[in-house]
Picture 1 (cartoon, one colour):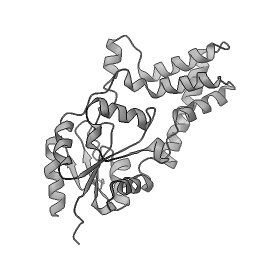
Picture 2 (tube, one colour):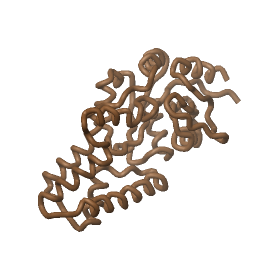
Picture 3 (cartoon, one colour):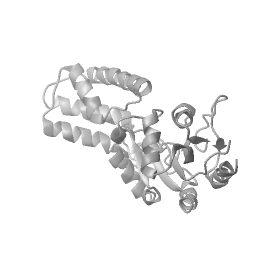
Picture 4 (tube, one colour):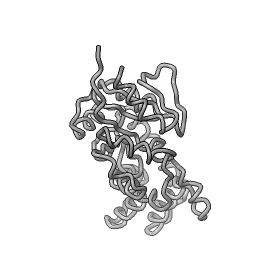
Length: 254
């Protein structure tokens, strides 16, 4: 059976547009702690303003909350917002913060990625410029600590945001990959059918299987990390962005 023509291409963000944690060497060079430790420092500092609390107690509450977060993310395809996470931690500790301080703490967590920005994946600028001439483009990404508004700012700062016609971030959509709703939302916002959509991602389960389940196609990107799996239903594998335009053209011919 003939496949529909490729009319739209969506991209995962981390390790597909930006190299995840490529900001950490920059933080270290500036004498800053890694982001996970810095976040816990912030929470401990805000709580200690009102009553003493051992750092070990804060760490334990964060460890438990992080485990619960991962369980909900994996099993229910939902990414808690930073406010959700902090509410869980505070409830577990039996503590509260004044509304203004909690809002400030949330903002500091959400915008930490802007202090030392991650590096773009090699070749992504040229690839997006070439693809923009032929396809509608979108971003489909889970938002872990950085919400959609911050991820848009990262893209804008790198001169990439204008390449994209639509964005589906899990904090705004309410679901995360591989939930069908994520890919359905992307197709709707790009005004294409699912079989006209190709998703580019680095994770066989979240990106490739998620797209495949709803009738879209997927290209497994191995430019930053090679997560290839024998049973991965990818339509193609791309190990360098310079190859992506020809890979998509080939998918059109099949």
